[in-house]
Image: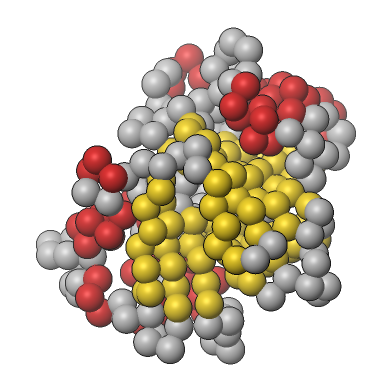
Length: 275
């Protein structure tokens, strides 16, 4: 791949909890995890259960890895203790999260996950983790030369972080978990996603399902279509699928969203975008 290009690969697309039944094999059952290659640099969006197979694919490097968390709800963090590179002292894994300072910070959250009685070993065994980086939502991050990451607050219980990654003249936006609401789109989020090549966004429900999930901090694919139009994104990719939505359901959604906004798609494990 060219040093100036971005590549996005999906390793986990599900929300709330992993699923493993046969009716979900086409789209996949692992929770949120995206691999983003910016030239030779590896960035990872969220540490859901999809992080485990991603880690298994990295046996030969790279040694330098950045993981950006949308938030620390369990479905977005559960893969970290099973990510092989964090137990390799030769690796340099930096984990980033926004908005956790008032609750003790990111390291405290990971310490809580990797502690008795929730886990058999502590985070001190993860010798490949070089840093836990806390930031405030709205900050602009520059983890490496040529990579700019813009952040924004999302509407989710406890808060979550949306990301815009810019590299080599391309940009992607990652918005999960988030409630778009029924009013005018949030100007800050429209600015974050403006003109991106790829928008990956929470579409856990349909419009028909939203009334029974008020306050849960998620959106419908119909809301995402309206938002994608407002932000003028090139490709809309539906993400964070409800664990109860099987392959038949998701294929029907894929057909409907392609009609509503041609070029849109439903995320599935193994899907790759070269930008």
